[in-house]
Image (cartoon, rainbow, N blue to C red; front, side, top):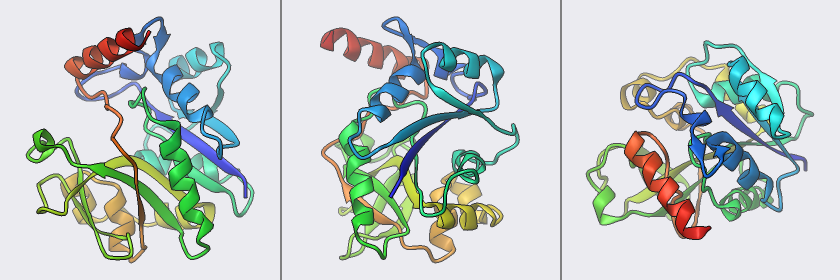
Length: 234
């Protein structure tokens, strides 16, 4: 089964514009994401999907495969789906967030492993919820059923069994294309959580557990925190 990781990347972030090109230890953030995704053992190909020629040019300079997409997608998954239309039937498609420069390659492998079960059509990842994240609306929460499938996602705390949701999604290609042909669900728009389109359409989302969530970059403070982490590791 071919496995392709697609990284949607745009310049127009509301809280931190141009963040995908922000410098982290001499390399743009999108390069960090691309390199980390390429380290996953079960990923065969990594593509950056963007509507911005400036991002495309930057990515090509460090050797990334780039797909130029339309600018009007309502979510990252819709942008990924535009690229996935060109993939072979049966391809496993992973949406890797372009603002998680320290994403763990093992998290991608864990999500891919969920598809060893032929009944799984969509999967994502979760990690233990830290106390400081309980009331943080930017830390998305998930609760699961006894089989490990998602029951609900929210930005508010969902109780003692809440886990931290990682914005890492994988689908069998045909399921992704079917989902993105649907209009955004009202609850998806209200909570600003694209995975709710699948959940409200009756799709089971298999959740896999990983030890920790990679730090996302939504603000300048987040960016400085990641830069400090990279300096410590250097």
